[in-house]
Amino acid sequence: MEQAHDRAEAIHRSVRKITQIRKHLTDTQFRRVWMYFVDGMTIDEIGKVEGVSHQAISLNITAAIRKIKKYF
Image 1: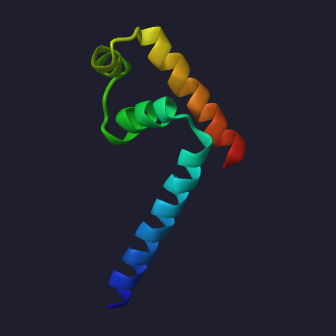
Image 2: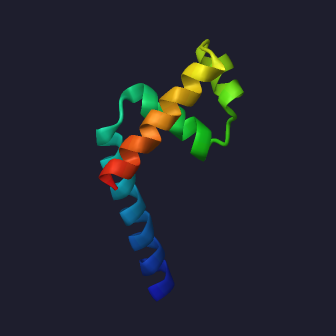
């Protein structure tokens, strides 16, 4: 029973952290970071889906990571 409570609390903390991160990123940055880190897509795959260059995706994700490090 305690394990279930600990797991639920860990999930709740994760959701709070994601919500905080989301507030500091643009919609585009959040979407691309999510695709890269959560969905496991490559920069080239994200570029193809969004119709933009590898460089644009890379720069956008790098800027998002800088923001995340700045606030967290």
